[in-house]
Length: 235
Ligand code: FES
Ligand code: FES
Image 1 (cartoon, protein in one colour):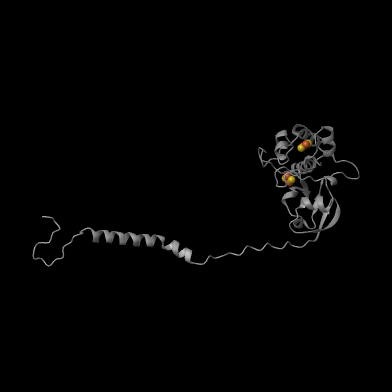
Image 2 (tube, rainbow, N blue to C red; image 1 turned 60 degrees about the vertical axis):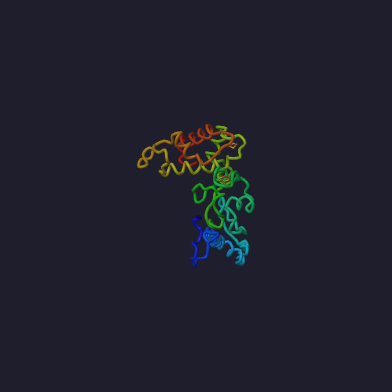
């Protein structure tokens, strides 16, 4: 006898397709699961997209007068706040001696002195130096006479193309004054005791922010050593 057959006289309906309810239940639950799975997607599609309006570009700040004391002379320049000191010197004050190499603080070609401290002028804004004293390569000579470090660069042939030279000269000027005032470097053996002489290692380390693509390093070190050895104490 088939296991599905209803015995004679029974009230029970014969189940001629015994696996149909099970299959139906399976299909129903699968459909429900599918519905749950797609529901977020369906909801997402049914919701209106949120459109973020594009950010409005800020209007540039208008130029305003900025007074810089450059090489002993006051310059009042009309500058937007975003103008770097390097561009202010070259494009607005007309002092083209300071060079733009990388424009991102990597080469040192733009080095100038601000209040006697060497600074990469491409990395600072002109408006930050209102009223400060700035020295560029044009201001190293005085009364028509080259400074000792300028003369030493010439004597030691410490340049080839000359593009890095204004920055090298400003940096070397500050280096000699820094050493004279007792500032240590990362190669100073004992920072509590200033070495009596600038070693070549000290010079190389202290000039390491100034790159020379022509590779005039040996002659640059020689020039700095000469001025230091002359014990002028002032570049
Ligand atoms: S131009 Fe300023 S560091 Fe290179
Ligand atoms: S002399 Fe040419 S980059 Fe220094």
